[in-house]
Length: 186
Image 1 (cartoon, rainbow, N blue to C red):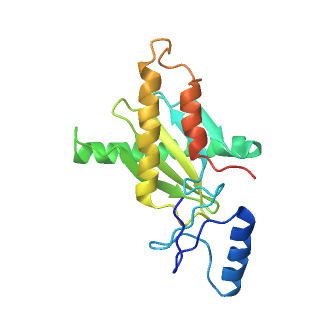
Image 2 (image 1 turned 180 degrees about the vertical axis):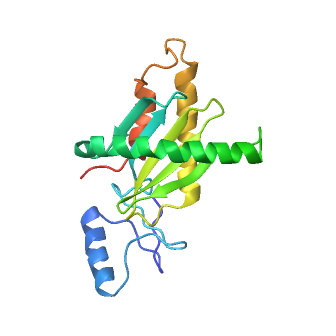
Image 3 (image 1 turned 90 degrees about the vertical axis):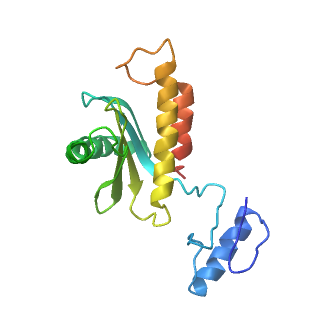
């Protein structure tokens, strides 16, 4: 992977990155990614979703996964409350442009701990991604990219002749795409 700071830093072991991070912290810098200085470490993925949900047209969950699992009920509530905001944005966009609407709804609402983003397909299936608020390096175009990957994977699930529309999603391929977007609990 490409590693850059103000000067080129060769690839080291994880222990060396920890020592480098401590030295930078002492000098007032950090390993956080900025526009021109990006550090990508093994477990520190730029895609930091803590919850991903797929909601059917009729507003029941087709798929929901959260990390850590202990907060699952909290994330179910967060996703459920975001549906009102999704409906408001859909109706506002629907009035502006009847058939040429933007699928990405953007930031639905921030909380103290999380930011909730939304996306809706042409068939009114909603995707909700909850991101940790402390992750300031995650940009809007990365969120859009996550939603595109999720939508493409969802389309693959729908094209499966053995999937009954409206059933919960139990595809291993879909699950692996979602797992790649999630924060790795450490």
